[in-house]
Image (cartoon, rainbow, N blue to C red; front, top):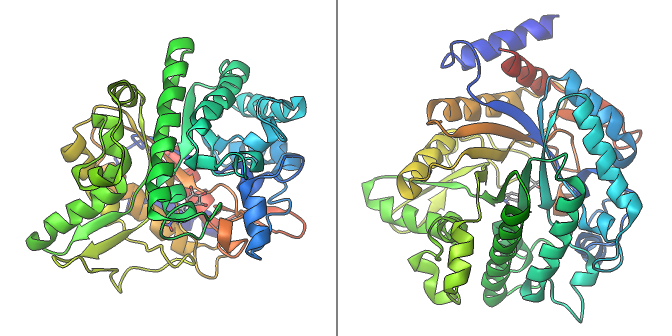
Length: 432
Ligand code: PNW
């Protein structure tokens, strides 16, 4: 009771910008590899964690067996919108186009369960768990142009099976992260085959896989489709740093946004990329029914290109992540000015891995309230929803289980779920 009134007080103070109801929904997000466990084919992340001696995913949060309880908990917490991903390795575990009926069945069951509680599904087709048979001596993952067609074939199966239950689709999660961290200069993620050339090529192939899939979807199905783009905000410290900030944004956000909106790479990246053909340009420009943006953190930049974070911003358990809400507002303004798009916008991920995380996660509540407040103030007409990363504590890729983002705690020994303070905070916001 005490906790409940504390949160009500918090939400009313922090959100004095809204009079009555929140002008967009707050949902939650997860991904297949990070939560499901059990009964699937091998993916590049299984091999990568093995080779690099990283923590293996094991059975993740056991969601494959606990999905009914998880959906019920979501419903109890008042969540009406859920973004999750489908595992390619569950649908086609051993070979392209050889389908596992049990794999298909799992997502039918999950979708039926969501439907029972009136929770709207937002389905990501691919969230990093590439089947290992697409990254080996014969086929070179996102560096191989044949992957575009494989991706379309896999997506066709999903549309055929699930489009009667799913209206909102997202093709690929964070191509930037895959290209920089899996194929590019950061090189800390699967598959870890890195060079500058690989970085740009893998991004180009991901964009085209999205464009051809969206084209097929639009010609054959009703509903909406987009691709999930992530970006930090790079805040210019003063007027003289504006050009540097703009260039840094082009290298990160424009790399994907420019092709989606204008059909071309930003000028600053032109020399690094093979240009798109006319047909590809047209497909790209027509490929998105909405913008899906993942945004977590901000840095400052000066006129010499130095970047840093403010010492006053609380740092997360994840060392790259700071509680710096101004960036969320600045990013939304930037999207409006630079891209003048009327497309609906979803924030498809935003969240915080609190240091010493526990169920009284005041640091996470602070982060979320600040970021949501910025979305309310800078929303324009087209913000439709905000998905918190993440519903559950889960497998945080190369960091294993050491960085927790959930609004629900998971005990990784007995898989017990316990809602944290932040989940009640979100419930109150949705109930306003
Ligand atoms: C996203 N960075 O990844 C992913 O979509 C999620 O699967 C992941 O769990 C979540 O954010 C939290 O990390 C990112 O280093 C990974 O800037 C790394 C970065 C950004 C996003």
